[in-house]
Length: 148
Image 1 (cartoon, rainbow, N blue to C red):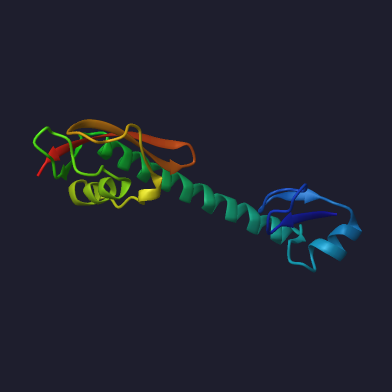
Image 2 (spheres, rainbow, N blue to C red):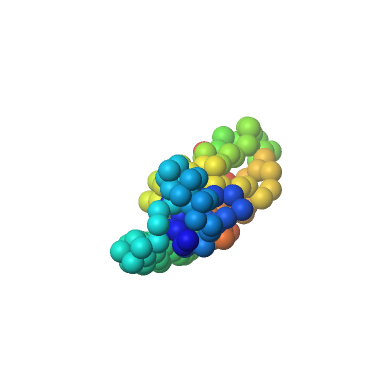
């Protein structure tokens, strides 16, 4: 019997995937637990439409991510920090400060958990950070720490 999985099932497949299983397994386990539906012609058409919509959404999202990456790489973001007389900053620059600076200067709101600072920031200067947008989309971004 061919069924369409509604949820991910270990050792069987991912959601929105048509798989062939034994009749008893489908009727006694998958369908009653709402893990799958029978692969009728109408259900297969619905699956096809669902996959088309998902592909369009992913393409739009990818275009938006590329736009954000291009804007972030266009120039460094300036982050103000209090410094001592020798140029060392008090404390260090965190991902939260970078996220706030991106929002203020570039206009994009990015979750601080997605930002990774490459080097430890303890002095004034230019540094690099990477932002993971998911799906293999990673942007390298420069930020400049300036004294307040």
